[in-house]
Image (cartoon, rainbow, N blue to C red):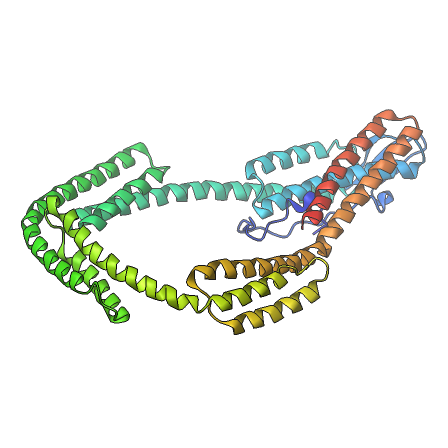
Length: 439
């Protein structure tokens, strides 16, 4: 494949993109650049008529009277190379998946239709073959897009059918009332996001889903009517749990007692709801007993944490040293100093619980700073990005030189065209240089 010029690298597939290469695609025909040897593809006669050679013979493409014949051929060769670059950009965008196949097909067809009259000097036959290749690529991509739309419609119908069937199963079988109700709401939310189903099919599936929801709601209503009968027994069981919780509130056997409170909480939930007018009062008594115990345990743990205060002070001293590290000044020295600090940090040991997040967070910030400096250094030296910027800079200089020559020859129209091309390539250069600088 010929060399590809891609401003900003924007037409090169990013790492997360999947290149769009339709099934049956073949390697693109190579198109040699015309500018290095324009005399292979054309000539200028003594009257200044410019001709290009094709498989069908010579064809006049213009007239050159602004300077030496060599410059004229180079001018028309550069115009050919610009067409070549445009075709390659279309193909690159198709391959990367960033381009619109329909738009690419229209652009490529327009280029092909205008090629017979194009005022350029170069391998016209090879460029035409390359354009035909791009057109075929775009047509295959369009076909795939249509297939994908049909597949998406079929997938949408299939998904709604599956959701309707799931709702019908829930309505007929589920006794997990809260979970089932939550799931039906989730199904409804997902249902609203599914698009692309035809109206007749969508209405039919919606009737099935709606009917299933109504059946579930009727069954759930009957269940909760029966549940009211069980709430008196739940009240008696909760009163027993409260009595046990209150009896342990003064315990100093921290581990086993805390474990038992957790078990009591599980049993409390398993007991079910008491009558509505008493359930909240029962819960407040049960929670008060737990809170009393855990408050006393927290106070005891706070006394233990006080023993770790010296460790926290030592770690603060290490942080003061770590936060002076200047990775931008000397990266290797910064990494070495940070490793030593981390080793000493681990040797110090535990700190009070309420200081753990603060102290570890400050150390992590230093670690992140050093790591960011190391990654930034690597990105700034990326040779591929620098090479791309150099390529764009060369094109700017070429067009600026061409504009100067045309202006010196009195051809202001050609000079203006060259200035516009130089401005376009300068814009791409600035974007490429900015990308390098931001790394």
